[in-house]
Image (tube, rainbow, N blue to C red; front, side, top):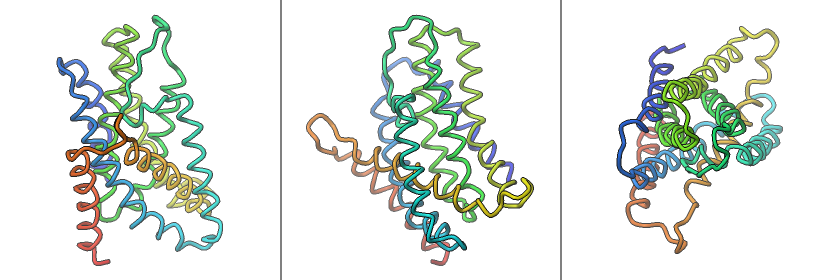
Length: 239
């Protein structure tokens, strides 16, 4: 396991969440641009790398089923997370009641997102996932602030969320290397589920429109930049 990936995953989400204590003005437009870039980047990496790798396995004919399962799983998770993984910030009116569904759904989502990193030989996926978690962590922290949680509790919940993707990375490496006995034949199927989640998340980010159903120029540039960086990495890796 590459420790630097563990650290990048953790600190991007952790710092993204803690930024709630530093940002005094609304930075939602900046967060949306980060989301647009990371969404386009994740979509390109999924299509260029993860899908071909998953279909190169022994049970390739079944991978499509697991991609569909992953896609539907993300649809289900969003019934509880309310789109926080997209950087959405919703106001809650339950007083001090913590939205447990949001936390559990978001942590499971982050855990699954960390799993494909075991296949990230050219270090292309790590940055897309890490960028994606910055606005997600910020949105989570915003919800906690709105529910009047104490600073110590917010830091604790942000820490738990920030650890989920690194744990997913460690779990998938153990699965792939056979350290979890008897599970290695299922690795590609698990990757199929993760691909389905990535496709849902990335396309949702890309196709979420403004009130006039148009993408502004800044968002379009961010999307093109994400796709461009992914393509540069793809061709520089010798494909």
